[in-house]
Image (cartoon, rainbow, N blue to C red; front, top):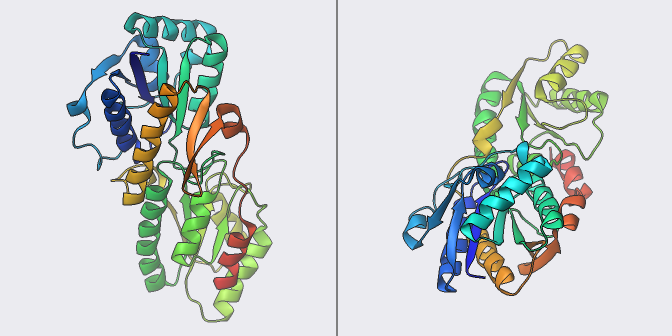
Length: 323
């Protein structure tokens, strides 16, 4: 192995740049040439590949997003697209890859490896959703929950000023970890997540109880993938049963993906980026590097994307108990 490629794919996540930096500098110290593949699998197919040196990754630790950019590629889902990607890698003499992304990125890597077993690919968990098995935290999650927390703290100020119920939607199409953590951290009155069935009648009773006990404002945090719909849908259903309820809806959206990564994020991303290169040097492939109980772990890509963290039911109860 003389050359490696590194790319980011899927949704961007704060801390990806710190990971890229660690991959590049660790590989260079090991005597390897490093290439950055821009725009993920799409760039791989198109040959959007650039050499990276030590100075290419200077002063990027604090930057959100990804300097290699990201994209979702429909073409890579086809055999023809993957064949083009393999041919472009061969042009550059690249057979070892570090893939930074989430389940979609790793699913693509698994198929790629099955078709071209001569490749070696190690994944690094980069997603704000924290929904990959084999690591306690994914790159981007800590920054996302802190961004959401600060936004909800600000919303609480205006909720209290106007005696309103605010329905705040956070990201989490398939997983409610962002919603749950921010609900606890901000003292929200209720949290709705994909992992638990939502009972509108129960939510209405919670809000009515608050009013009866002189609580003039409430915050309801909704993960976008909740079974009863997003924040607008939930608000309308509550309004039907509480006509006098004055409410507002806030969609935090993509602000959760941006911003400077937290200290914890930068350290985790650096550790995992270094370990990804070490794993390739040791001959590993088809695995994701993660951190469980502060120890580096290797998890097969298939297991990382098929098994998800279970929702902590105790933490769910915590929201209602402390509201």
